[in-house]
Amino acid sequence: MRMKRLMAIGVLVLGSSAAMAGLVSEFPVTVTLNPDGSGSAAGSMTTARFSKDLVQYIGCGIRRFDDGVGGVFAFGFCQASTANEVVGFCESGNPALLASIGDQDDFSFITFAWDAAGECTSLGNSTQSFYIPKF
Amino acid sequence: MKTLITLSVLQTIGIAALVVHAFREQPHSVPDPHPANPIATTVSPAAPGAGEEHLRAIIREELARLDTTGDAPTAAGAPQPRNASADRQRREVIEQRIDAYSATGSITDAQMTELQAEIAKLDDASRRQMMSKLVRALNSGDIKGRL
Image (cartoon, rainbow over the protein chains, first blue to last red):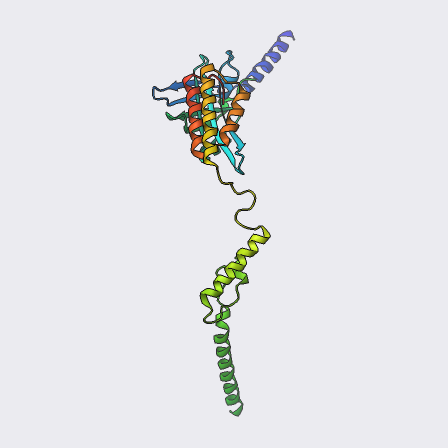
C-alpha cells in the first residue's frame, strides 16, 4: 500500500516536471567596442534581468520632447552593459528604426550596432520561448 | 402603312432632338478636376476676355478671406521660425554641459533627461551633433550613466 502511494507521488512529481520542460537558452549581454568608436551589443533581456551581478542590462527605448517651437524631437536609443561593465550605447532619429524598437517584447533577445558617430545602424529583436525564464 | 410612316418620322424627330440636347449639355457635364478645392468652388465662369485680371481678383479675394478667418498656412501648430543666434548660444551651453559631465565622469538619470530636453530645443543639425557627442562620451566611458 505504502509502495503504491510512493509510486503515485513519484508519477505526479515527474509529471509536473515534464510540464515545466522545454528548451531554455541563457544569453548574457555582450558588447563589442571597435577602435573607431563603432560597436555592437547583444543579449537576452531575461538573462540580463535575472543575472547574479547587479550591472548587466540591455534594452531600447524611445523619447519624445517638446522642441519649444511647436514641434517634437523624437529619438530612439539602445543601451547595454555586460557583467564586467563594458557598456554600449546608440541613438537614432530614423523612423524605421524607431518602429522596430516598438516591436520588442519583455522576453526579447536584442541586438544593436552603431557607427563611429554613435548612431544606431541596426536594431534586431527575437522573441522566443527559450528566452522566457524558468518560474 | 400611313401609321408606320408617321411613327418613323416621329422617331427621327425624337433622335434629332436628343442629339441637339446632348451637344448643348456637353460643356457642363465635364467633371470638375478639383471638386474638393474650396477656392475652385467659388470661381465663377470667366467671361471671354476677362482672363488673367479676373483670376487675380479671385486669388486676392481668397487670400484676404484666409487672412481674416485665420485659416492661413501659418496657423497655430506650424513650426515657428528659428533664431540662429539663440540656437548657436544654446548649442554652446549644451556642449559645455556635456564637457562638464565628461570631466566629472558621470551623469544621473535626472540630469540626462534634463540634458535631452535641452538638446530637443536645438535645430536639427545641432541636435544630431549633440546627441552624437553625448553617445560617444558614454561609449568611451568618459561619462558613466544611461540614456
